[in-house]
Amino acid sequence: MNLAEIIDSRAVLPAVKAQSKKQLLQELSQALGGIVAVDHRIIFETLLTREKLGSTGLGQGIAIPHGRLPNITRVYGLFAKLTTPIAYDSVDGEPVDLVFVLLSPNHAGADHLTALARISRLLRAPGTMAKLRGTATAEGLYAILTEPPAAVAATAAA
Image 1 (spheres, rainbow, N blue to C red):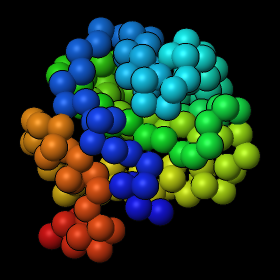
Image 2: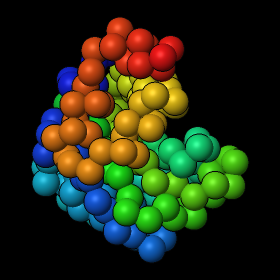
Image 3: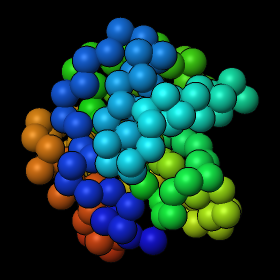
Image 4: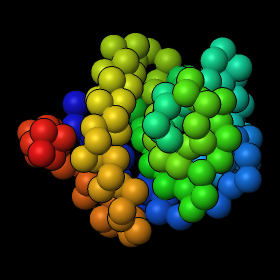
């Protein structure tokens, strides 16, 4: 699965300012609401419910909040780079500054897991993390996120 299939350039936020995990999820839900045509409160509740099961903070400053919605027809993503890292209850206890939100239809079990795995591999690649943290524009971030997997693997190996 190529990330260009689930994220478009409108869904890349290069300078999000949030003071808390809850505020961050609210802001990202609002941004996603316009893209997926779903009430942002429904998205927020979906993400918050998932967080109550366990933090989606993977460590190394990365979080992938995600959830399933009954009224969407495909997988959607949104990437946000925070201006200042925030506490997120991550597995390593470190604050988060790179966030990829993933929303999937209720029936998309395999696609949801495939997308989560792809995003996790991409964001955890040291070369990719450094590039994302060193890029300030939505266009630049989008280009990094949608690089073909072979290019990402080459970057990670370098």
